Image (cartoon, rainbow, N blue to C red; front, side, top):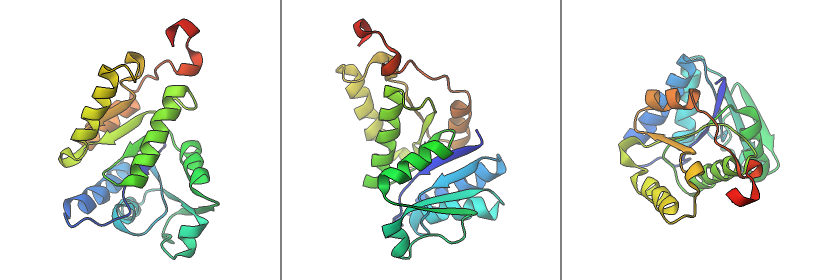
Length: 193
């Protein structure tokens, strides 16, 4: 993997572990020569991941919608800051520029980005690994919900392993690097659907 799109919150939670985690992820990615593609903001976990990568001399590509850039939350320190028309263009850029997706703790926007990456993988719009860093058990309930969707038959067994989840970054990155794409819906026969 040369680059990963990192999805994470723009908020700064009271629990300082989350910001420290994002900074550490940025540093680790840079140390492993993996570029960061992220939302282009300078606040919260977004700002921390960018700063961690930049402090370790890593590549940081920020992709931010015009409306947010105008609101002065764009991070001018990025090695490449791209201003796009809106959220759809931003998510398309994440997909185009990255070799995989890494989700850290975050809120509604982070979930939107994660679920679109999962949906696109399931359908066959991309065949890239999707990693979920379940630090501090943040995503325990989400992973239980993903299991529930599979158990009830809303997610095919063939697609139940699209999200790669680990509590430790190195384990997650190793799984992402060795990821074997599943058979997408677009490639399935009618009787398999």
